[in-house]
Length: 238
Image 1 (cartoon, rainbow, N blue to C red):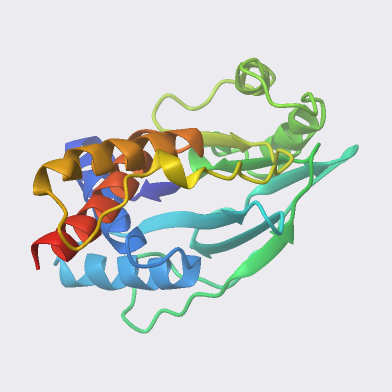
Image 2 (cartoon, one colour):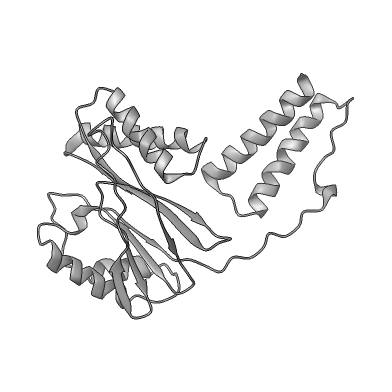
């Protein structure tokens, strides 16, 4: 979740660039500190006279642990049981502010029933702490299980956002992790030394089906299928 300084088309274009840069960096790492450091460097090297804030987080469903870093951005809020508070905020300067900026990571164990709120400062408006307390109360009253009504219920419980500012809200509900179902080897075509290149289409379809069964969707499924089929195609052709 991030926010670019300023308004209008220039700020929107910069946010689009940041998302593209983040997608590229994420192909090589999921470490929030490395991602924040990379975004800061790219933004400074781009020559754009703008700064941006961001929270970058990576969820580990096996350990039920969130690792996150921030760059001049409000810390996420966590609702656990009947209490709500902000996570401890690690160090991190605005993106695009200084080549020497250093970012730190923080971790938070999350369990079923917890609710995590990531947001931009547009949600706070100019009221500051009073509005933050209002958000905390509203978050405390949300259901403990994810559902389509949770986000509208949160927004309905808040005073109107300043129309001169923008606001982004992300609600995250940890769910119980289930081990992936073993995939029979017969589902995947075997490629030998004398493989027919025409069989690569069948391999691609099998890989795509495997990714879909494991819960990958949209861009994640596309990237997974592309990566595996590139490896297989190179192995066959070279």
